[in-house]
Image 1 (cartoon, rainbow, N blue to C red):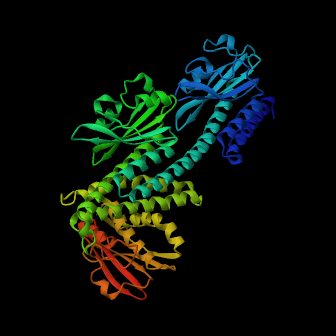
Image 2: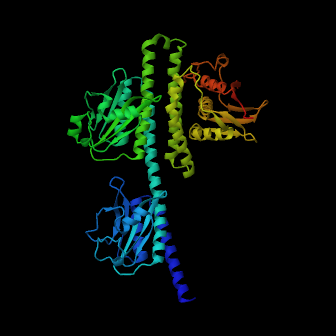
Image 3: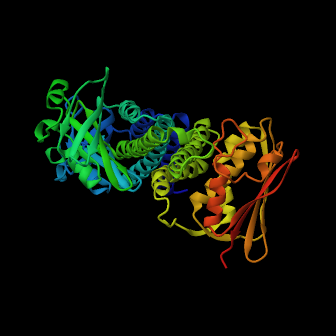
Length: 570
């Protein structure tokens, strides 16, 4: 082997060893800070460098901040470098690696340490976006060449991948915790019947979820065009303050009118006309105002306050919007219950409720369904038993169910308007796979085995996916209630005559009593103490609206079987 070939082989081994050690950091720890320390140590070792650093862009100041360093002088530590300044700043701005073998010949060099004679840097990226730079210095001139720069770029790319995965895992765990709290909030609010109770609950939970100092809930009085404070929560509990303002007097009004979130980073420099004394006394700097929207109409504003200059990130804004949306549904739900219970007390205690009472009960029933799904999925995520791919699917379903919650109350309150649902071509196999994903943990806990017999053909229907999921979930949950000690749940798909699909759901429970069998699809008819008597009635109405039907095939002490019928896409 020639000397040149030996040098190439040595460089290749050096590169492979460095990349292997950087990639192995992901398995050594799940802490990004520890990984950063390991990466910088590996860079120092690989290049025999005088100093090295990893700098990341601060989203608030838009400047580079050194996250970890080795060998820097005292003057360089803690220095904030503007984007574009110096070799590191240029790399972070342009997203390209840069080599300066002799800093005396490099006009872009910015001196922080007189010992540095040569320097190179490579970008650190996250999802295709440059978020910082990996910088290496030498105290000797011409100590780095193009091969070194290529290796540094490879190390930076591998470091980016390792860090991105770690940040993603940490972010997913944080989001799972937040969303689990959000599910608990939604369940708690869904059970409340008093509007004031709901309002105080929103303000209290916002403070815990968002880690802010104060949270306030304003409701809009459309007749008088006024925003009225109903709940103000601080670090020491609820604060007794009266506050009324016109929407034109505050950025809260902009959030209300524009149906959008408004963020104020410096309350002292804006013309805010609310909480003037509180803002000064508590030194509140930043605010996020989120409208409570119900049926495309703002009914109030949730405002969050922080005692420092702060920019709420996208996740925090999404969380605030989700909380506000759940709050809006809960407020309208409580108002509806209030109207029903206050004006129709005698009818609510009778065998049948009026149409208004039925609508109120259906709202509560429909809200519990997606909340139950969300709870099951979070149990799955927190158990750690699912793969990353399955977790991503679960999160997609969670987002879908949160959107579903926003639509439920509006769809029911539009009763009688012939409102069309959103119907698309839907694979029956795909529909059932999604339903099985939603209930898999509940089936396991109930010790119920599922037996699925799919059709050999891919059968497709034109349907509203969310509504069909609800109908199937109602049947499956009823089946689980019929098998308290475990059992077998069988689901079979067959192509019927006349371009129809049959879905048979069979349990091994004790069956339906004879006196109830002829009336099981009537609203409010139930054989269980905890039941509402709405599940089968709603499911049948969903199937009827899809030009199909829901039938009771048989029921005995050996079990019960229902058949869903849907027209196929021809």
